[in-house]
Length: 158
Image (tube, rainbow, N blue to C red; front, side, top):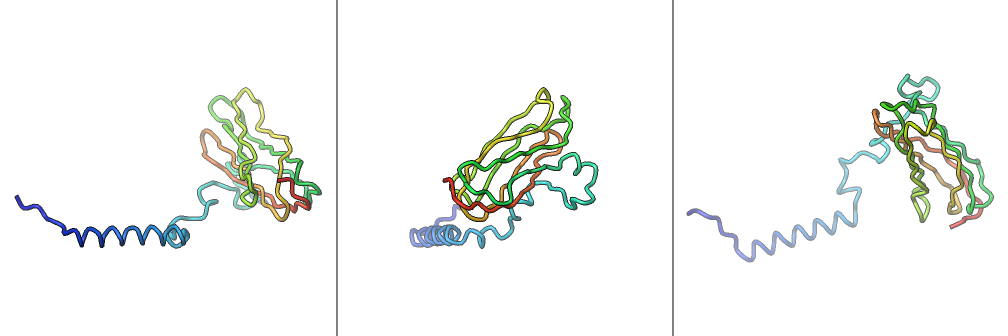
């Protein structure tokens, strides 16, 4: 039996190194995750809005928001897509998020082919200042697509 024994001192030194590495990773998350691409690279997007490919045209997300919202308590938003809603190819869901807000998620909306159209018209509450609202749409065949729109909110509603 040729088992390798580790001394208590070597074990404690290794444990201290792991804990120190974890602490550094917690303090500097970007340094620890340098090989991870930015969040938007995980989603598909229309590369050139003036000349979209046929698949991009089908998955383009139209976001309508005011340029300046006077009151962040009720900011109107309309999201639509010109996407087929056939039983084998449809939009499964849309999610609205704003990462500059205390409440990041603004809603998740689910669709079926019986919905007929991927369309949302609602009001969202937003914090004051500059904001960028993202909409993530999930197609059952082609994955998740993203688009964003910027606006200014004069008076925060959060």
